[in-house]
Length: 498
Image 1 (tube, rainbow, N blue to C red):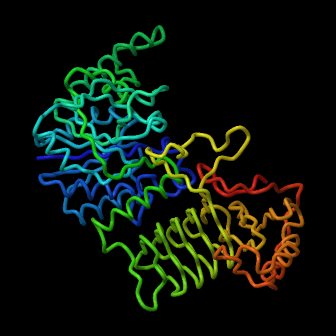
Image 2 (spheres, rainbow, N blue to C red):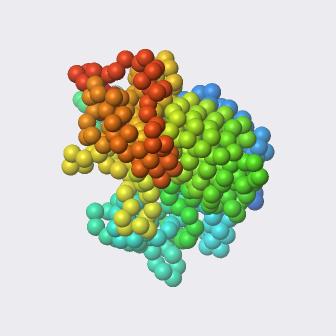
Image 3 (tube, helix red, strand yellow):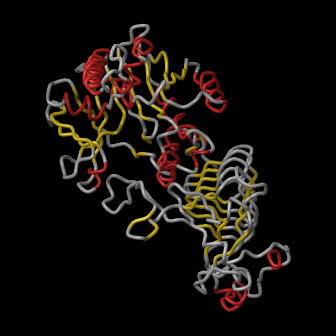
């Protein structure tokens, strides 16, 4: 008998995933067409002898989470339950707090998976390694280059026995090229070291209480246990922790940019695991390039070109001549005719207007790429906006539908999610002011067919102008109250500061 525990965190975590985590809990954000943690549940359900899957976190059990759990139980014919922490307890505190639930029924062992990882989840191989040589802790590891290894937990192993001799979480200097994948297989005995950490925290906390405080109860911080620092680092080299190496796909999902990278990995994995999820090129249908997921309810025009690495959600409308690549389009969004969307996440219910070009900067957190940009807590460095994918806001703010309009001069179209006004920032003339819309006309006419069209190949007609915008009657923004809009992908919606 086996069980699985998925650590889904809580709303105070995953701040780098904003603004997407404002709409749904981060574990339910769709990656490659399905909620992020559904990939974990699918992998656990395929392990022979799996009896129950437990989700542990600090999220409130809202309607979205409840609906997902019910659907997962029906689809996989397996109990899937959510256990809510009373306070955030860290990566190990929830395991100890709900130890009775985990050990109920006497499981042989239980898997522990972090929700914010993307992997092919070699759980059966880990189980076989555990049964050959049982130990309290078995970690899944993979390799990274020397530069990127500093961003992860580093493992020094015995190459013959695979025992973990030393473990350091995010070291300041190079320790090892073997990194922790955040996927584990624990025996029931693994909960004993967690008990020791809890008791030690309790003793240390009683000495920290102010004079006069009642020390008879539990110290509130005693339940917080960090698996990596409090357990793995302390027990390394004592014959209790071992590592199983994998050469399969793996990545963290910390920010929106890493979600696009994870979507690419999962779509590629679908070739082996779920070929039925991948769209096929059919006569009279859209042109498919590479791996593409299209929800059955989405409406895609036959002249659209999709892929590679594209995921289209429920109820999405894709118009004629649209070019879509390396992007995720979420529920209810609309891409109007001849738009070009690259390296972008289009928010729920958003609308991208005709002939618009929306393009972000790819950010692939590949642990084996020394030039990869790892997820950062800050959007800025040395006064410069860090490269990031583009995130279009949703209809959650304001009263209208956010809409990005065309930018034929090669500028950057933006949208204010506070007022949902349509604005153009003209980088051809290096200015943004009360002349934002009129200034687009001369540069549009001067570039003509040499401008960057929806296909990036100069596809805008020579005499194309702004009839829809200039005839719309929208008030032009004033320079005194508006500032340039930011297309910040890691933690900020497209918004104005007025």
